Length: 208
Image (cartoon, rainbow, N blue to C red):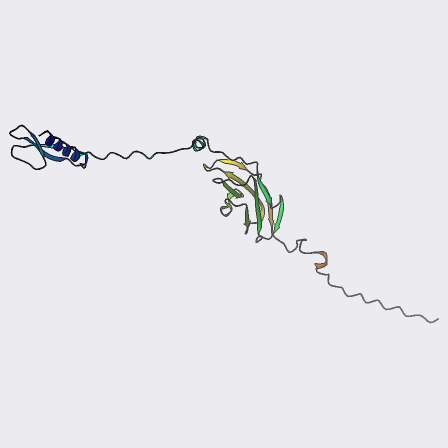
């Protein structure tokens, strides 16, 4: 009898360990000899018991292995690149360009070069040159006559100014007909020659 009870208890433990998230019903009863029986099939006089299934626990968080070098790197603040200089190499200060359709080359220089995440902006007369963003070279066309000013600035990812250039001035002029640059002395129209005056007739000689 003891062996039978041990087998039944073993079955119950196996059923309990293999149970799913839903509950399971079983019946228990004692026979005339006082032996306790367990079964998943109801029997006369049996008492129903409910065995709660073990719900699967949440998986443990994945183990994160961090080397000492990685931990040290993550604890250090990001390095902010500082710029020593920013300016223009072309055009020269005070340069003059003739004709409104002149193409004006712009070259920017910085030390060190632009870092990843930073922005290089070029302004013409206070307005951003969109095509020149993050570019060290650009071409300007279709400018009005007069004096123009170039400036450059480098911003960080948050839009804060890190360095700005000194202004670079140049001018655009329109050629004129009487511009000495195009018309020299040899090209000036010659005056119309005037006819030479007719000499007066000589007075007649007298015979004495």
